[in-house]
Length: 271
Image (cartoon, rainbow, N blue to C red):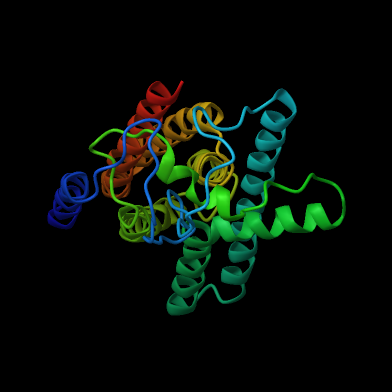
């Protein structure tokens, strides 16, 4: 509990310090030479360009076909993550008496899901495009890389570096909590809490792609609301099964609350 409390304090401190240290330009203004660079981790993008954006305002408009594509990718990614767990289950069953081996398999599988899900779905998207089963996404060119810096944002917006930095400890805590539930379900990848966790992870990756990489402010808002709802449901079920596992997800709930509020605030300021 002390670790969780410290994490919550760090989240609050990051938001406060970034709001003071990185004020953003008002709507319609252009910042020169945005040299700060962040990773393409959920909630971040490569923002090194100084070229003017393709679109400002509410960004790009997500039509029905694109929205359905996002839902399809979320379902496909959820299935992929459950497949990773099914593989882990089979590997663990090979040496049921080797506790260290089974523990290593469990943590490896959950680390792949929590920390590498965005990379996995990126590979799937690339393969589908190569097979001409999906349209190529927006090219992450110079103008797209500066878009996030040019839209109107609230003063309390976390600095660019906060997003990828905060997600690392949050994901590690998710691994710990998910593994507890994984054991309680008998390593069943189709157990409700496990499916919910994978669905929430897929929706989170969808939001990162839609909002930060493809400029869908309104569409991103819709996706992050679904992401947040799935996270809350997952946290509730985790807590009902094991309070410790549920507590490991609470810092993520706090951070996604901030992200959802930020997305809504950006929507209000740019519509």
